[in-house]
Image (tube, rainbow, N blue to C red; front, side, top):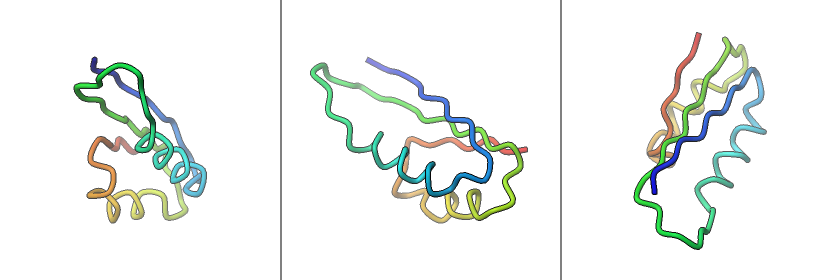
Length: 67
């Protein structure tokens, strides 16, 4: 099974971090072949984008789209 998760965000780095960590730790009853997490940032002015870029190796399924 393949699925996509889309997360819109704006200046919510602590909440986004918690959400991404929860997704990485999910346990499913069916095998998951692959998945993607699409983060859509609406021009955050906090450290959301730099944090995601720094932690990219920890969240390999994340694709970032920012304004």
